[in-house]
Amino acid sequence: MVMQPVLEISAADDFALWPVGEQESYGYLALNGELTPAEVGTAVRQIADCNDFEPEAEHGPCGDIVRLTLDVEGTDGSPVIELSVDQVRKLVARAQQDVRDFLSLAGTWAEQHLPAQAAAVTAALARALDLAPAR
Image (tube, rainbow, N blue to C red; front, top):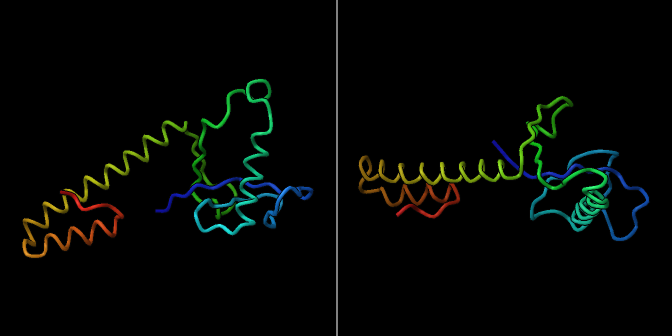
């Protein structure tokens, strides 16, 4: 399972304030630390464009709904779930806690079943899960 933040991107043919990437009329841009400068420019342009209105007057309160899509690269009709930002934060925090709890349990298991290799196994699991080893 992969979860990644994406922006819905619309084309802006007449945009010339800074360099942006080539865009189809509509698509998604995954946000991460490996974007090209033009992709960063596209993301900044899209965020600015989405926030270029008076929130309360025109659209009601904004920036508090997150849409989770099963597969943004898939065909149209992929299921979408809308959650509040607070709900998403709680879900992510719970998932992180579940992984930390698993690592702790696996460390205890390794001590019981692989006592000579328990520290190495726990450290390897922590690296695989991108966590510090449980103490």
